Image 1: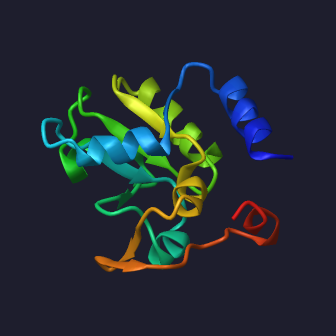
Image 2 (image 1 turned 90 degrees about the vertical axis):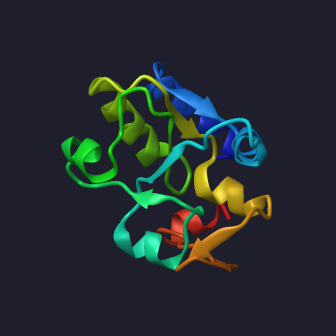
Length: 141
């Protein structure tokens, strides 16, 4: 399976989800005229601990806690990501179902971001590694 096919299958399974490319997200971060989106990492705590996008928050298991934990309004732009985009598409759909209006799934997610030599962080410091999830998915790196 190649990246284009995986992306197609994710879009097919989650047709209501909007997607954002890694380039579009990087441009958004670089635009001082736009408020940056909330980044929600849909991976496990173990994966997140290895590295994540700067300013990303690990998604709470109970999505009803989102408003309380990070004070999100339903109009707050949110970008979800995981390793390749499947788990984050599930999270994006759940957020949509709860009334969030500006939810985007990061196309290719962390693996695409990392393959493009974009920065990932651990404890606020840039690092050069990401969690492969398992042996099969490490092939996508």
